[in-house]
Image 1 (cartoon, rainbow, N blue to C red):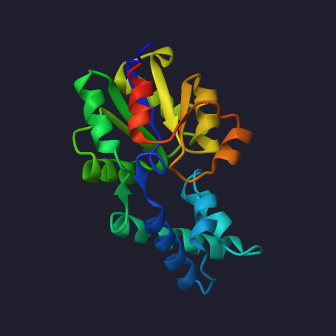
Image 2: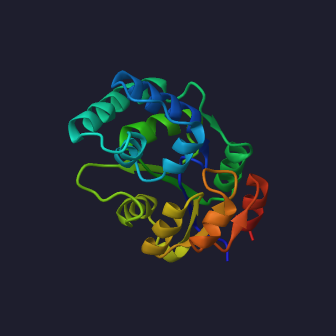
Length: 216
């Protein structure tokens, strides 16, 4: 059955944001006198929002005050440099255009802050999404269902009419908590063995393959 709506994760699913995030984290760490993290370390830390990203990135034993300083610097630095190396994954803009032509609604749901999500959507996918939802104060982040529920309401669809697309164990848990069918993409921030251990069963290797699955 073809779905009425497709909900996409952002980082690692529609946008390759790793290098800009790594640059921001390492800039913020160095300002506090901490060593930089390797790109692959930061890749593994992504998925639970910036607070957890910084918590995992600072050295073990870092004081709460020092960690807060790194977080504040990242909050200032990243929005100003979030589109220097970031790019849409191959085939994603074309996929979104096809879904729009078919009358299928689309949304982005991310643990990035809501202003950052909207800014990146406007920059890379202007007019291609019907809704974009990022983290908001007082609302639980993914893998809780709350942000997905907001997107479903904005799209005007029921959860059984939507499918969730993501690249991580966090996304798998989000889909489960939201009661949505899940397709896992393999071009993102987690390797297949990690995803399979987390319960992934349906995979897309390319955007074209994902398109074919969505339009069945």
